[in-house]
Each structure stands twice: as structure tokens, then as C-alpha cells.
Length: 511
Image (tube, rainbow, N blue to C red; front, side, top):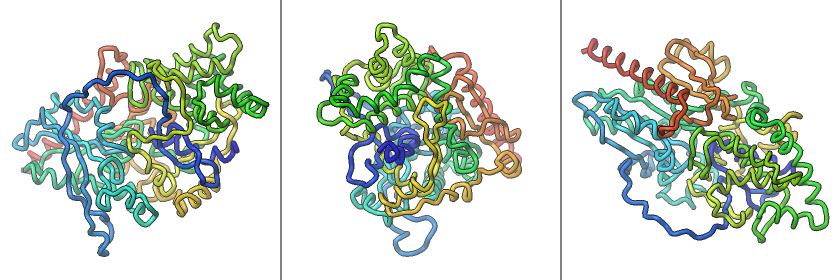
């Protein structure tokens, strides 16, 4: 059963934010591919009014279904959502810049609300801010906005691709600039995670639309025969081991103890009580996935300030997990130590009374990443070696392909992304035809192993932060941000300023 569970671990490893748990399904490999959040049964608290959203206005653009064919179905339309903030925009007469966020695999409002960097720098640049939703996510659903139809089979989901999404963005941006009489306004695209990958690819594919791209924590090299499938879990291991050798050893040794306990008479009940699992469902493999998820996402979002992106968490949550594991009050009780660590991720607010492993909500609309991970986004991340805090496991493409065939009836195309966008020998290739790109990576982020970690040219720059986590640079600035993070953001501002200044110089020279 453990092998079957590993078949789908790639889904939680890269919706870059999505699948936080798995639930039982009739699919023959044990679980369904699902992007979801674990449900915690909570103490009921009074609700607070969210008030009016002042960050952006919601708009819709009539988008074409298929940009690359001319058959009758290609001309179907759908309503494509984007968010806009013109509070600080200098306007079209000044050709003030437009900063566009290339939407990820989820509801665009969630990403906009967690990309404070764009709002923070808008006054300095007098920039218009636009956040474009990715097709098939949030409210940008083709086929009349009906998810039951759009998600029904491979014939409809076949229009969910990165290339179609990039064409969506280009079409929308060009039309928006025309409508705003801002045809000459420079555009800079920004994205984090998968959105960062899209931003970098957009700059390569549509250089006439965007003058530059900030790609934060964008693992554009995390594909077969480029990045080791062990890289992801090796970085998570190092994150925890760097905090405490004992913390590392407790986690590493816990999996066998959980499995041995589950096989004993009354063992499942002991596990249920130890980890405060709700009474409706308990399973060893799902419990282990639940714990692995907590460790992986905590490493990914090991931010230096408190956050509420995936779940409410304290500053430096990996350190807090290891403090819980090293707490002498738990004695030699491994399960108590693990529960304390998991609570940093799942229950830092302290409101949960039990955790429902059988419940799989999708609060941010991430579910269809599973389709992308079964078609073109084949990113090997599940390898675990002898030193890993996770059980040993080998990346197995055949197992993934079999699961995708069983679930969606499709065969993955593992080489398509590198064929379409490149990746092999990137340091040699990009310097010859790319320009104006920033790649930020924090080395505590498991995805940094698949990122661009050194400068490619004078205009394709890598900014690497040893203590950085997943697109931490794009978060709202706070008074508690460490100096290294403030410096990273200032470097990004300076580089973007240079791009825009050069654009204005060229525009004036051309005139």
C-alpha cells in the first residue's frame, strides 16, 4: 500500500501549493489525485466581517478557447477573470508601466492577496497592477463556466495547457492596453512558483508584449534528466537537520514505528488518539501522507515572519517544529513529538479538536493541477535516499504514467515542456536569445533545486537567498523582515527600474 501511496505523492509535491491531503477513492491505486486541504474539526469562533476589498477590482475578458487551431470548436469563448488596481497608475499619457501577475494553478484572488510586493512597489513606479487568472481555475472556466462539463474528460481538459494560458495572457494584455490607450506602456510580468515559470516562459515567448519578467521560486529546470528526483526531499531533509540533529532523527525513524504500530492489534486506535484524528477514518498510509505534507509545506513556506498563506503559521516554522520535537516534556513519546510538530502546520491557531483525514476540500480551486501533472508538468520530486527524513523511494515514471492513464485516460508527455520552452543547457542557450529576467530562489525552498541559481548573462540575473523560502520576496513587506530580504527586494526594484528606463530611452530614440 505504501508504494501505491507514493504513486500520487507527486501531486502534493507540486501543485506548488495544492494537495495537502488525500482521501479514499475507488481508483485502483488507492487514492484520488486531489488538491485539497486537510479539514480540522474546530471550536466555533465568531465570524468577522471581511469588509470591502480595496486591493483590486474584478473584471472579465471574453477569451477564445483555442489559440492554436482554426476548427469550429476553437472559436468557442469563455469569460476570463482578471483583477486590476489603478490606484497609483500614472496613466497612458506618461506611458506608466503595467505590472502583470501571470496566474497560477488556483483562484487568482488568493494569489493576489499574497503577492504584496506588487502593491508595495506600485507607488514608486506609478504602476497599473493586473492579476490574470489561469484558465480552468477560479472563475475562468471554459464551456459556459460549468466545471462539471469543463472537468468531465480529456476532450475538454485538453484545452488546459501552459501554452494556452500564456496565449490567454498575451491576448488579454494586448487588448487591455488598447482599451486603455496605453499601447506604448511597458509591461513587466511577475509570478511565483508555477506562476513564476509562466512569467519566465512568457518573456521568452512574447518578448514583444513584456519587457521583462520577475520569476520567483520558478523551478523551470525540475524536469527529467535535468534535476535529480532526490533534490526536493534532500532540501527538506537539510532544512530540518540544520535546525536539530535530534529533530531529523526522530522524524526519520518515525515511519517504521507508525507502520509497525498500525499492524498491531489496537494499533490504529492508538495512532488515531496520538494524532487527534477524527473517529470517522484512520489509515496508516494516509496518516503518513498527512505528516509528510506538514513537513514538506512547512519547509517550503519557512518564512521569517508569521504567515497565513497555506495555514496560519509562526515565523520560522521549521524551527518551531523542531522545538516541539526536542521538547523534553514529551519524553521518549515519538508520536507526541510528531503531533506537536504537525500542530505547528495544522493547528497553530489552537482551534482544532481533531483532524478529518477523509475530508478533502479545495478552498483555493487548485484541483485541476492533477491534470497538468498528468500531461505536461512531469516534475520528478518523489525520490528519497537513505539520508532522507522520508522513507526511501525511487522516482518511477512508469508508475506515474500508469496512474495518469487509469485516472484520466491520458499518457504524459514528459519531454514536452523542455521541447517547448527549453531547459537543457540553459546557461549556454539562454544567454544567446534571452534578456531581462530575474530568477529569485531561496535555498530553504525544496523547489530551489530546480531553479536558476546563477547568472546567465548581464540581463538574466539569479538572486539567491540562503535563508529564503518559497517566493518569500513576493510577500507583503513587514517591519520584521530581515535585512537580507529587504536587500533582495531592493535588488529586484533596481533591476526593474533599469528595464523601464532602458525602454523609455529606446522609445524616445525611436520617436
